[in-house]
Image 1: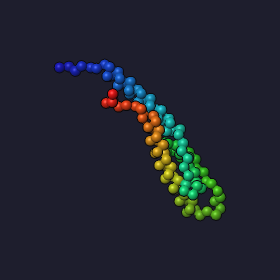
Image 2: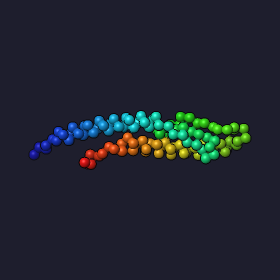
Image 3: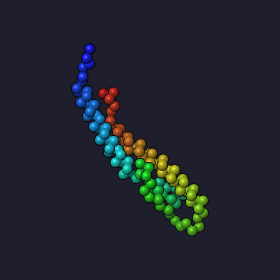
Length: 108
């Protein structure tokens, strides 16, 4: 017994695929463009990071003359760790914004 082909369902699936592809492209563009600023605990180091996790700038505040290398290294390590978390958080927020209203196939 041959199966019936539901043309409307196929058309809807194709349209949904196109919409998902469009949303994915929008999301990837937003992730690459969205920048978050993260500061070290003592506020001496600032890192700008995209939601994709790319560090775009590192700024050192204040003088380094009386600073021990180990202290600065700790601050840099802390802010890099926080930057990775901030990028993850930003990706999740952007994902919710872009895909939040998109319903699955099983939803009415």
